[in-house]
Amino acid sequence: MSNIEPLRHDIEFPGMLKKNSRNIRLWHWLNAIVISGSLITVLVNSTILDVRANTSFVKNEVQKSGISISDLQAKSAVHALEDKVWSVHIIFGYLLAALLAYRIISEFLQHRDQKFIKKLKAVYGKSTVLGESKTLMAHERFVKTLYAIFYLLVFTMVITGLTLAFKDDLQLSRNTAGFIKEIHGFCLYPIIGFIIIHIAGVILAESKDEKGIVSDMIHGGAHSPATSKKHQH
Image (tube, rainbow, N blue to C red; front, side, top):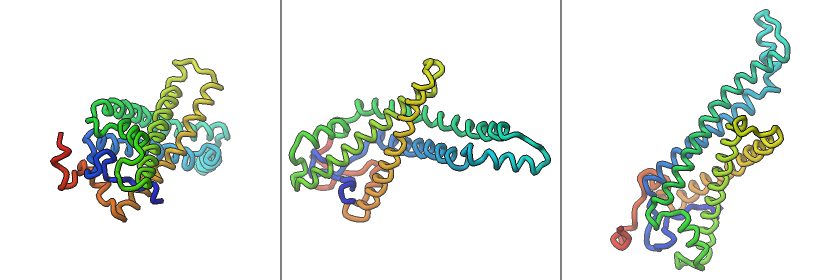
């Protein structure tokens, strides 16, 4: 698990602690809320409102009131409830798309030492940046690569989700829509995996010698006292 601990030290400025810009912090927490909400809607529809499991339940409950309904009518009622939850899921999807656009725009507006692309290039372009060991460099490469994959997954989920939301306007065939839906659904699992790894890594790092990661993401972090003047912009 040591390979997924976040590093608080700046990879290009070894004496510095990472600083998180206001844009990144805002995006991070809003993104966490939106993705969590989206995952909850999927969980609700796949468990509590599962059509196959709830059709007979709805039919039996209605019959207790002295009203007789068919399996098709009961199934339609469950579908209606499921559609309500999916409508909320779609709203979260639009919000995720807006946050992705915000993240892309903020990447261009970030100061050069906080650009993700620049840091990703830095960890692959230098044999050692921190000047301590190749292990630290390998660790940072792993973390940055993990985040790059996460961004790619979110991008894919947003594009496929928007395509499905406008499938009628795009006049997609059933087979095409079904294929896109499979890709959209598949992205969910590695994103869940990333979330688990991310949280586990933060907890592990906070319990060791990288304390303050969570608070840094709230208030922005701070430079180490000895070198703060060298890194002013």
